Length: 257
Image (cartoon, rainbow, N blue to C red; front, top):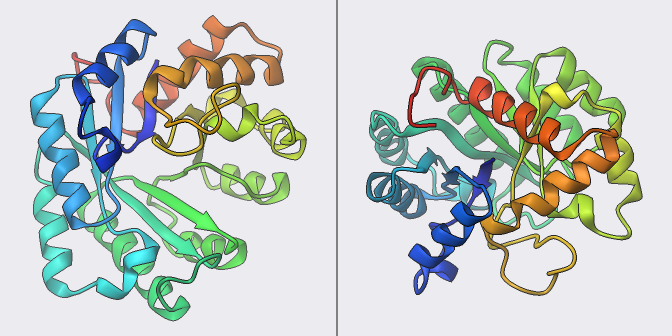
């Protein structure tokens, strides 16, 4: 299995990172993609990818911190992308729930990072919360940029518009929540060939571990729920989602994943 979106670069893992990775390996999680959300976390994601063979990195600025965007920050992210274990720009996008950065600034920085991904020929990992129309419109401005809608929580109708554009979706712990029937209906309506597995750890811990720190070792719980929703075997889900992850992140030619 591949955890397509984790935050082992989060301080929550400072004290037991090696144990967390060992537990993930014991549960069949062969690779973990750590995603940055600011410059510091992006740097840490790259450092961890250098230390641990099964770890990879994604670098970028989260919409919460869009107000911090500068030309110097853009250059720093661009420099990080030159590392051979950096796979994409992310997580970037729009968050109108918290509005930690002004919405016009979020939209500007989202476009800036999509333009950077276009320049560098890299895929993009997208965070979108309560910003459905603006996210869809801005993604549509960059039709040649491959996008992954991380922790997708929108409607099936919107998902099908993204699917027509050729984009992918990742799902994690929320699909296991008892009150998530609407989300499971969305997941069921999407082809398995467009879905990736994620944990978003240390957040969104799947049932029955809710309330505790999430970690990649919990990824099999997501795979099991996805198998139930799609009426497939867990083996089918693992095989297909690994293939999808390798395709999206362009890892098909890398022998160590």
